[in-house]
Image (cartoon, rainbow, N blue to C red; front, side, top):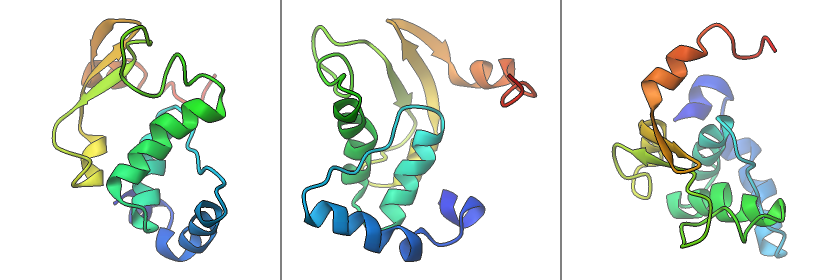
Amino acid sequence: MVSARYYGSAQTTLSPLTREYVNVDVPVVALPGFGNQWEAELLAEAGFTPLEAIQIATTNGAMFLGESGRIGTIAAGKAADLVVLRGDPSKNISDIENVELVFKDGGGYDSAKLIESVRGEVGLH
């Protein structure tokens, strides 16, 4: 899990706060981006099921941004921005890190080549 490596215990920090939001119908969101994978792992460690964490990272984020008609779920007419993973993050949330292919605007990209192309550049601009 990512939290043990980077953030300490998500169970202690996130669980009471995020579950309380859900109990009063406040949507919990994670916004798109590379860190979104880590956020989903943290949410699962904090007590959300892997499927809830995936929904928070996709559907809820799109709703929060006012873009649910365009992104957040897979459907005809929506943007073809998605990832192909090795594994099943609905059963093992850590599999969310195993990105094989990235599809953006309908084009497919090799994940390893994308990461290598920005090595040493991330955070500099």
